[in-house]
Image (tube, rainbow, N blue to C red; front, side):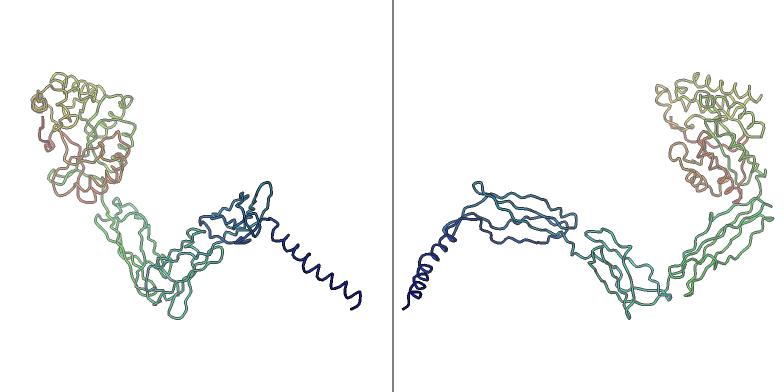
Length: 475
């Protein structure tokens, strides 16, 4: 063997038996951070609870590995889509090692698409009305307005896609059908009141159809109104859609004349107003004058009536009855007979100073049936005494048999109108209680008058010779 070959053999032996074991030992025995099950990139669902995964990391060698401390830098907000970087820092006895992780917050949940109808009826023109559809997405919220519809054969496909592309699809059987009539709506009221010889103005109507849209121009009106002849007239509004479905509505038009005096045997309405006058009374007198209606005012001299003496004079001069309610409008007037009459004579004197007329027509505060007087009369049953004593002294007291509700039950004009007209019937005498210190009640008067005149009632002012309307005495 040559000298060179011997040297090569010696080198290889040294390498095999000395260097390699030494290197292997160095690698195996050298301590280091050892990492298992660490994921560099992961996904988490939108709004899901965030669980941070730092993997399994220790410090050591093949003969042993010690636990390390872990610190996380960076947060993931799962309520906001996007990519987030999280850094994990591992430390052991002054040595540090770090790993970076990318977390992507994603939304892979499709919208919840609901179509309630099992079978969809669609219009001849292809539109799809009256379908109850909803689409709610976990990220976008309510996206019902973004639901798309399309026909495929005998099905309607409903599709909803959220902002990141998740899609839900619902298929429903489709049948061409239109059995729904147009929606017809009158402009103005269903009942119109027109004074004799005045012009009737047609307000028309509107019509919309589930399939054909606006059909207002297709409305026909049948019937006529003759404003030169008293009576009730009926107008019929009709409209038909392209599928032949028809809708109709009627309007009543009442032509009536202003209030006229007729024999007392007719149906009579006595409008009576307590507690005034007030800032609304002049407006009320204008309405009464417009329809030649006479009313009755049971006046007071309380603070809110100050400065309206001229209104009392106007009401008297225009033929309305001026009655006496109370001067003070304090229920303490029921403490004794003398106290009551002192108050009554005070308001009587005021009315006489203003009008020159001595009124003997009265209305008890609270009415003759009131029980609040029990709080003041010390058990004397004063209403039983006063109801007799006022008549003995020549007065006539007036209660009511129609309650408008303006004394506390409502503050709505329409309800006042409804309360009054729903109380009317075929009796000969209706005495209505209202208050001209309430603007909403004053606003109701014109509608009450229109209804009354159109339905055969005569409006009268209450006088000493008018029919008696009394309540039962409760004290």
